[in-house]
Image (cartoon, rainbow, N blue to C red; front, side, top):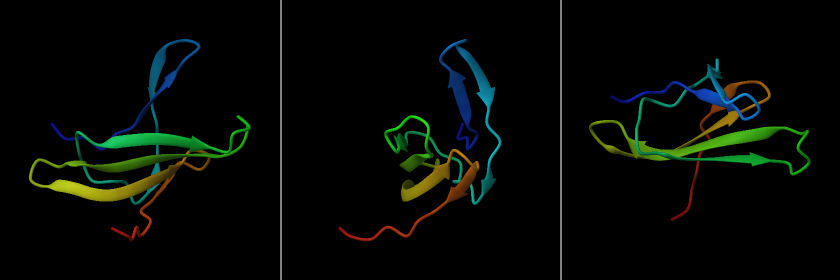
Length: 81
């Protein structure tokens, strides 16, 4: 099954919660990579990057970014090799 839902783990209570988001959410996928980037202060904004994966039909080669402050997805135009 391929999903595009998002959950967050509270590391103090070890309880999962669903995360509501807006914007252009990534298509359903599995086997993707993700990374969280923050400003290094622990109190500033952070972004969750999602790359690639498999949608059941084709390999994906896209990048989506979630602003964790606003809960908004964007899909930046990525260029290069």
